[in-house]
Length: 441
Image 1: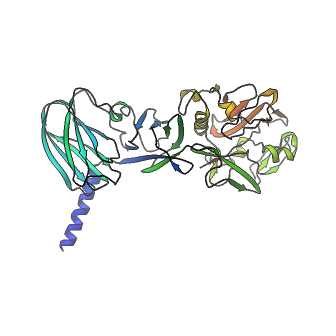
Image 2: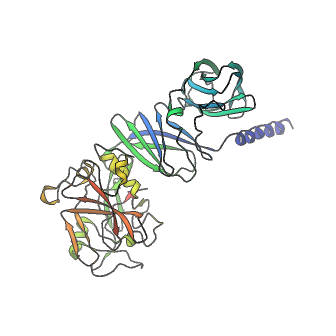
Image 3: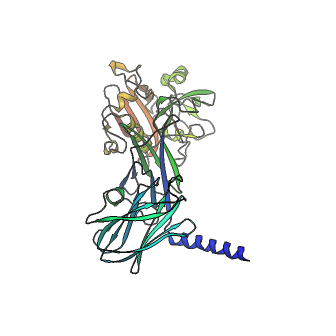
């Protein structure tokens, strides 16, 4: 009977704790170079849906998102009690807790563990303003810190590495300040909000390098930035698909096929591609050898298999036709002047400084327009089929379809040209046959 009562009490504590906390996601970040661990300098998180961004600085590598109303904004007008997210988080040895008190009063400070057990319960008379405390956690991976003042309360969740040095929890008063504390919680996240379904861009930085990835988080997860470049994708050096073998290339956190896709049955450029059981392709000059060397040319609807929702399109399973946002990450990764997430990549015009030169192959381009192929992407100038049976651009033009529609009749594609070091994003006729380059899911 005592056992049942104890179990019921523990279950009740869990329920009360769950209902007492706003639903959150915990995004944890780490990094590798091939398989070797890399220490991140910082992580920038951009909300592409609602706009706004926040930055984590090492050793803080966990972002906690309130997905009902977004991360709480900073209130410094003196109207309410507020506890700011601790720093660093997760905690290895000690962490700083900061609260804002709108007027002088007695504040009750409570720290509980994951089971709701109080490990610290203390009171302190505080003046109006910002107050900092140093918390040393004992054994445990998750704690909750709550400040009570009058009828108000404010809470945060504290994560630890699980290898904390202390066995006894302690909370020490550090002092007061007249201004907001100078760390991430007050400066960078105050304009950042999040709702379920938002698309986020994560950018990891180490030394002079950066790596990016996209995510639409629905649950807490760990994200691993990759900083290896110009090597076969770790564990996936080649991909065999419909009788063809493709090499892979790792460009930071993106894994690409190194060659243009070549799948399907060749048809004449004067014949239309149709929604049938056969994948069809055009080969430059209606010569099958050109497809074997440089890949097929496809109309956009054929690429998407007549389903604009399925971004896999004609790519192998586990791979997909890249989106515009994914191409922007590639561009920001390789360009020497404009990084990932830079507004430079937003316009419908030539973009970047030397991104095109770095992605272009070292041969095949006319008029000495060859690139450096710095990252192994090997962009070849194989032109396109103009939709009227003709072929244009061999040696001077490269174009790859994206999975995004720009309106009801046209879709986006990426373009490189012999005479420029830039790239171009264009809204193009879906009846033109262009190349396809697949990206790992």
